[in-house]
Image 1 (cartoon, rainbow, N blue to C red):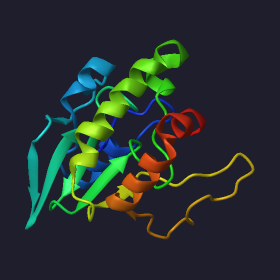
Image 2: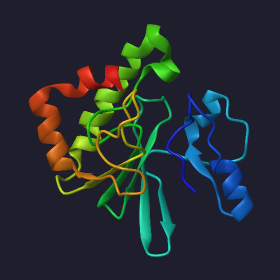
Image 3: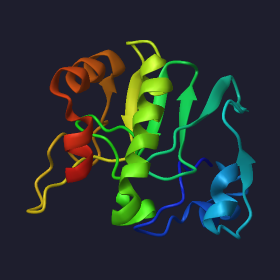
Image 4: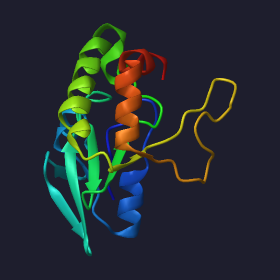
Length: 171
């Protein structure tokens, strides 16, 4: 079982679920610096996990959190967690706090431009969740439906609108 990051706004049940079903629980090696004391298999940038014929590469993408990982599946699908959504990027103040959110934003910018946007345009982006407005409307999908976008489409949208800074502060 793979987790993208240590959550600052809720508790993940992934480690418990992994133990119950008897599979390894993977998390960034940086999780120990965030105070994680439960058992997990640490991953470093570039580590590859094989599940049958499927290869999953861990990509360290700090910004939303310092230990954030994205997972590139067979070089075609990118599980982005809370790094990149189909309409925005992840928040940076949850771990870093309001006073240091700009440091998180710098890390996120670098992760986007030096890691994610270096991938091919036909990479399918699969974010951790969709956007729900404060009045409960779903902005870009519905529960139970796949939420995905092609990286090339997101690249054009983000580049043309300069939305990285604007959107990260509102999500």
